Structures are given as C-alpha cells and as structure tokens.
Length: 127
Image (tube, rainbow, N blue to C red; front, side):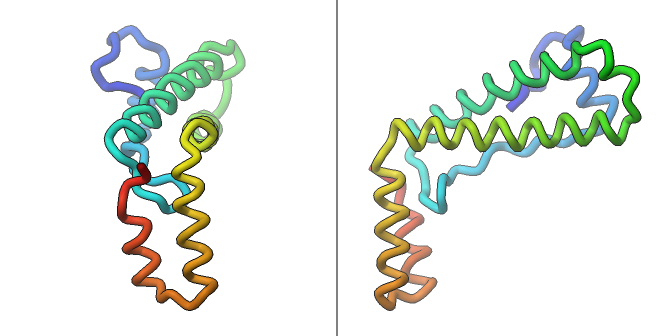
C-alpha cells in the first residue's frame, strides 16, 4: 500500500490524488484464513513494496501522461490488485500453516460442517 506520508513530490502519490483513487488497507486474510499480527505485517509490507515499485514503473513511463484519466486510473487500480495478489502468494509460500488451515476448513465443509462452522474455523489466525 502506498503511504500517504510519502514525499509531496512523489509522482505516484500525485497521480493517485489527481485521479481520486482510494486505496483501502489490504485484507487481514489469505484464502479466507485470518492472519496473526506477524503474518499481516509481512503481507502489508510485501504488498506495499511491490505496489510502490510497480506504480513507480508505470507512472514514470513517458506514455502514462498521455493516457486518458480513465486509462490511468485503470492501470493503477489493476496494478494494485495484481501486486497484492502477488504479495499474498509470497506470504502463502512462506507460511504453510495458512494453506493448511484453508485446506482443513474446505475439508470440514465437504464433510458436512456448516458455513458458520467453517467461518469460525477461518477466523482463528493461522499459527
């Protein structure tokens, strides 16, 4: 996620403000599994760094300034979604307990657990 406290001269922040793009915090779940504080911090950090790097590349391209605002907005929002997905995959790869918790909940549902029971299983942060 792009921090609003970044330098005023940041072209990425200027584009986000100009295009009136609202960036919500990344969700505290991966594959429906609640994350503990450490996992969420890892996810937010990875997503922020990946997003900022990618948006710097996009916004600093000479052709970006010549696109219609709708196209610029679309490029930025799609990039944010893609980098967040990538960050989730990175965290999932390093935290097998998250995948195990998701698989366990899916198996419980297949075996007859109610949606409510599965939701309760997924609320617990993966350990």
